[in-house]
Image (cartoon, rainbow, N blue to C red; front, side, top):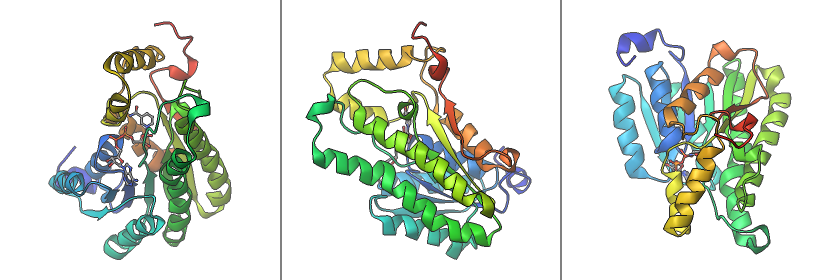
Length: 269
Ligand SMILES: NC(=O)c1ccc[n+]([C@@H]2O[C@H](COP(=O)([O-])OP(=O)(O)OC[C@H]3O[C@@H](n4cnc5c(N)ncnc54)[C@H](O)[C@@H]3O)[C@@H](O)[C@H]2O)c1
């Protein structure tokens, strides 16, 4: 579905969506999926090059794409992306708080205070304040949809990955609370909990570990899924599109695992 004709009849025709971390992986797949279904996109990312490539791909699908280069840790940058949607596209219908980093893998008691602050500043605080900035323009449209990208790591602990898991568990809790506050405004707030997904985020793990340790960590993660495989970014984007769409009109406050069965796995493959 990538013609202008399919766009005009798509689930997101006439809608605009802001996506953080849009230059790579799950964020990029969300941007392309939503554009195929009619949405205009504002992509925010650290990578100007990645956003340039994304804009070309979104435009090729017949949608409009604005880009904002910067870090979500700068809350003014997040607010600027939302403002861009209202300035250029006339309003805001969707927000995907997706930008995130894997952070250090190390035993609990060796974690440094600076790493703690960094993880909060990228994985958590922008989610809160992004939602805060989005609510006024969404109210002006009569409602909207927000998807916060958490992780299965926010529901089940992973050894030596406490900082990451903590931020993702907090994103889930934050989603529940925001869903309570915004339901009266017809703003639905949900959370995606991906299992392992083949994206460049694993390069952070590869850089931090010796090759053998990296390979065994990957196999361990894969074996925690019932399907014994990594998922794709496109499988995550399909779930995000559902959660943002009117088909999910009675769905708010959930943490949806898209995880190959990780959440019910007994660890056997
Ligand atoms: N890949 C997985 O297995 C997996 C599993 C569960 C959850 N997640 C979550 O999904 C989200 C996307 O991850 P991904 O796997 O697509 O990773 P990715 O590394 O492919 O993409 C992340 C994007 O976010 C951007 N980004 C990172 N820090 C940023 C910052 N400070 N400001 C703006 N942009 C920033 C990066 O430049 C990159 O384009 C993350 O929140 C991650 O925690 C991923």
